[in-house]
Image (cartoon, rainbow, N blue to C red):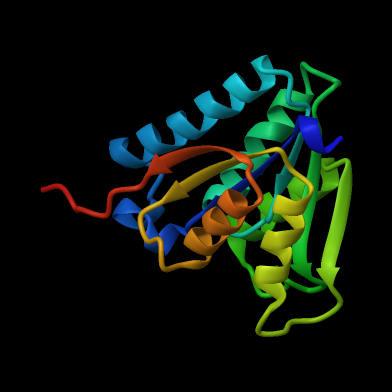
Length: 170
């Protein structure tokens, strides 16, 4: 399974250009690049996708995988949730998206029983350890996303990096 598995890493909306506002063309372009690489991965024979279920890139990728599953029954989604209760404080569309995705996932893995200072890192390592490819959206390599990219490099995963430039265009 590992050889046909892709995982995602990327920033939460507040660390993306325009705070991840999906109504802004630059953010739409970023998401389009993410979707195009997912499509390319499917064409390359990847069938299983792991999302860490954080707001932003993880959720956007997972939503697209759920959509792909409707026309391609070979596609599988694994939600690697850092700990039980991870999204319990989410509200509005974030909560709805999380619930909709987990309702349509093929598997939900709670990497830790409860929150700890290391549970996000543990989730990221779980995903990389079970994948052959990483799709990343990054602007800040000193972040958890950067840490995940370095772990994937160390583990010799195929990688596709999408730069998320933080310059605010006026």
